[in-house]
Image 1 (cartoon, rainbow, N blue to C red):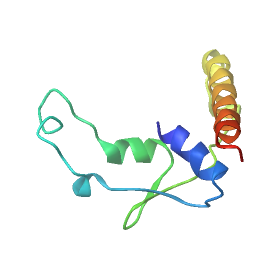
Image 2: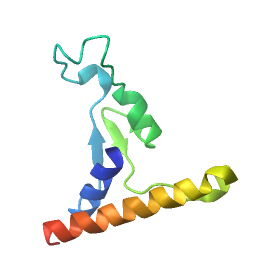
Image 3: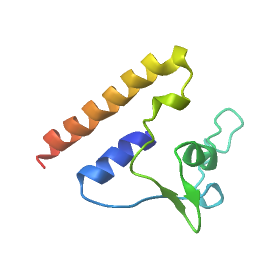
Length: 96
């Protein structure tokens, strides 16, 4: 989902994507249950974000496959191709 928001941010011409830190997230009764736990800080950190007042998320992802184990490179190539296709689809559907 974060990668989709990055693609949408770029397509719309913005140069920054911010995430709200976990401690400021609005929590519903359902989300507060022990069965459904989302750690937004972990999600944003895994996406390369830097925590300041808000999470500052990079719009570009590191596509260097040298750091990826060889048995997972095919999966990452497919993932990057899917994200490229998604960005093109967003751009087409929005008519930009």
